[in-house]
Length: 163
Length: 274
Image 1 (cartoon, each protein chain N blue to C red):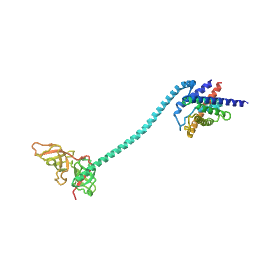
Image 2: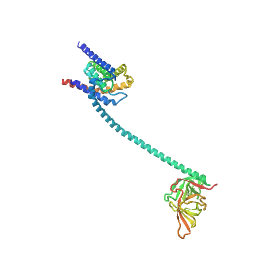
Image 3: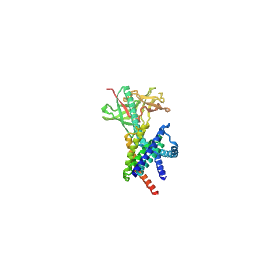
Image 4: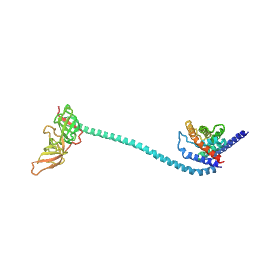
């Protein structure tokens, strides 16, 4: 229960910060997305199921706070969180580059999925997915990932201790 | 075996999540605005939107502060640039005004040059006698240009004086305001003759006017042509005041010079025809 509350609070804060503050700072059309590194970090630390659920929750919250149909970001982030968890046991978690690399790849995957969903549903989005914007988005998210990864790791350690 | 179960569970979770999203998306795209948040979404939004609004206000305030901060610097730079521009334009305006004034003066000299029946040489005033501000000045034309001693010096406004010293390239002019200066004049209206003398001030002294002559303020005083220096008919000035002393045989008057003797920049030197 406490985990749900903590992660719920974390997602709410991250989502609000993104919508209210980070959305104002556009770099080459890209906006820092802290929800994606959170989903990636949970996937790496807790496995694919939790990564997928966290990604879905993060994406739905993003959709909710934004103005679009619910599920577009939910699907993309769910897939990214789930995919991050698939490597849970085959990678060395202590590698300091892991969060950044995983987030970089996760961002690219997320953007491709968003584009695909956009094309299928007729929402478009091809114009917004230019290669420079995509790369900038991936780099920005990757830059944020180590900090968030560390924070989530700290949360997990604390939750394990209280148990 | 455990690994297999784990993999199946994982796949089951993924399929469940995926189906959930697909169903959600389908309902979204079937709704009129392609967005239906439902009661749970409304609840979440109800909780989060006030916080979001507060955060947006904070961001707005921060942005305003930053804009003001950067605006001050930008305005300072712009102010400096505009000040420099104003200074440059002021200099340019002053130079243009100076040029326009010089052009007007030279135009007047040219008109005078065409009007008088004398040969004339235009000259620029290069120095004034610092000790006798109104009395003498030096011009940049001399013997090489035909200037000779006693050559009359005039402006379009009136008589200035006569040359008293000549060097090859410059000459000194004794102004009519100098106390050493005297020239024969006529009152243009009454044709009464007299002599105008300088007094070292901005007024000239007209004397030897006949007691019977009609002299009024504003009467124009012109050269008489007597004395052999100034040609006849050049404007000297206008009568400012008249003095008639009881029992005196003659009248006297104060004359204001027509030429601005304290502001001379260009003059015309009259030379006899060859």
